[in-house]
Length: 494
Image (cartoon, rainbow, N blue to C red):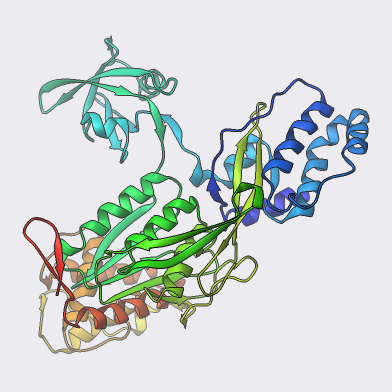
């Protein structure tokens, strides 16, 4: 159906803000009863259905008796009259549109076929496997007592699957020693949060989605460790983040707010579901010099809630492009036939900007990224036979920085190897998985020149937004630190 196809395209940009009730309807094979059940859910939870009782239900039931194959289209036509986000989806459509919100039941390991058997290639964060102490590189020799040494990774994976709450025993070989652990299968969700120190005192945190509480746990760990790094500025990248769980966004906003009792956001339910629910800060956020939030047209839903809350409360400045504008949230209701009813149940409002549905957020500093075409032949020749050290002034430093600018690691070339250049060199080394060094080694210069040759003639996007954020972050980090990290892992305000 064309309407659904258009909505699924939008979902790639704007995964619905989410709370999940355990509601379901019973399938008995009759379209009339099935429609009654689905409509009861719409009538009970739908934000826009509260004051719009559907008086033609009996007529629709009669129509569906004669045309049962039209139920899918009829329900979606009704939902489209309520708002643009509510929809009835098949299980396949739901998985396509909401992949970041769906996990799986298991122990949380990746498997790899090796010459000696099946290896654990990955242990997912916050999984049963992580809690049990499994590590990447463990060789699986038995599952529930069955010899796994001759099994394929597909056969081992089949044994690891099972119902939520059931146990599985694994015997692994680690550095010549056998270990046996027991894991309880449970829901496993991917983690969409990562961080990296990009300059002295500047931490870059990327949140690609807010798919589950795991993302809050990962963010919380990163945030609580900032004082140990003497972090003074944070770049929070929410670009392309289509949203997720509202509670996760509110927790993130709270932990980033220094003062208590600051109005962070409101969640507006139907009156019979509680009306306006206001959220205030608990205070105690790390006193950073600056928080910079990167946003774009793909920043939506709960990600907009987080960015807008920080913007309205003065906790952060926004850089980038106007956001998507999805200020309504949905229940995702499981139906007995495997389909999903996604129904709008709430609106989100910010302290100053109110509900941003259809409006979006306007960054404090609006910057668009630009396309760059690499012409390696026009670059200053780079001598990679000798390394370059901090403080060096030369044409070869200029040649190196020309290339770092094209990779988006510097804002402009220079002939002086200063702190900015050092940060760019470190970023290049990290991206190429080369050892961190306090100078530009010949090996690093060779890799940099090779990168230019590989990109020669290609056009790609230069991340001007991140460069601007990094410059502002560096300036803020140069200011006096507002707190002192203590030996016990806590901190005190200066």
